[in-house]
Amino acid sequence: VLSVSFFLGVAAAQDLGKAKQEGRIVFYTSWGPGDADYVVKAFERKYPPLRVETVRASSERTLTRLLNEHRANTFLGDVVALSGLQSGILKAKGALDRYQSPEAANFPADWRDPDGYGTGLHQTIYVIGYNSRLVAPEAVPKSYDDLLQPRWKGQLGWDMEEYYLFGALLNARGKETGLDYWRRLAAQQINFRKGYTLISELVSAGEFPVAVSLYQHRIDEYAEKGAPLQWIAPNPLVGGDPNKISLLKNAPRPNAGKLFIDFMLSAEGQKLLQDKGRSPGRIGIGPKNPRLKGAKILTLHVTADEYEELGKEFNRIFKVQ
Image 1 (tube, rainbow, N blue to C red):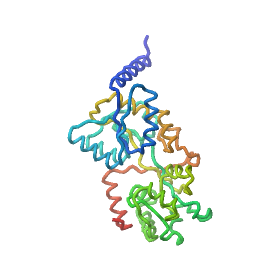
Image 2: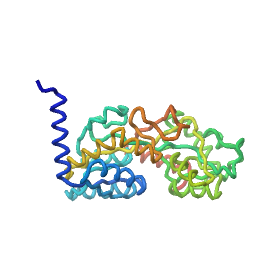
Image 3: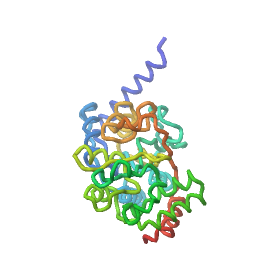
């Protein structure tokens, strides 16, 4: 009597054979080149002669490109990894295909699309960043409320479009209490800039001593290179809307695409993301930095419409745009 596992093994071998016949994968992502190359090379080593062609751009540009290709019925890519927000837009516009990876069962329920259109790979962790040369240990802000102290007036940097964290704190504190907090923070005369890489560099250089929020893994990267940049984990500790991996609609190489998705969601693939400082979604792996071990992370899942409303509210309070 042949077991179910035998037939599953045969099916897996056939799928691997089909994937190798397809020869390559076109992978759209917003990851930086260092992170993407690290993961892709490991996959190519595991599954020769498959090759991954990585198409990198910002989340916004990747989203625009994929929507344009979808409207034109030009199907070039196989797999996409984007923020949960953009992934939701692609799903709503019909640009994704259903694929429920067998590895998805190892992820929290709210990281898996209920209809099978993607699974969260990892998330960024929001922390308060500061220049360790300019801020004495006893003065380091330990919470978002500490940023309201008079000493920080005119001394704080922040991203001019940080609608996600804005919304997460409204969610955590309740809308009225949350809005009151943000109004008080606006009175601190924030130095707004665009992009966390730039803000990380400016805090390192002493342009302003503290950032309202930065990405924890980026601060760790800078600190490892000797920059005077450190972080504190405030309460609540907010994690970004998970970066989701999905199969694209009418992918020219669907078997190779599914194999790549399975690899990224496997313990092996998740550990590669952990190596790069990301906070993987797979249960039992967690963030790389031991300071975050066992941390309770608040994750906000927002629709495109909700995000747009948060942007309007943010700009009403901070008058950035």
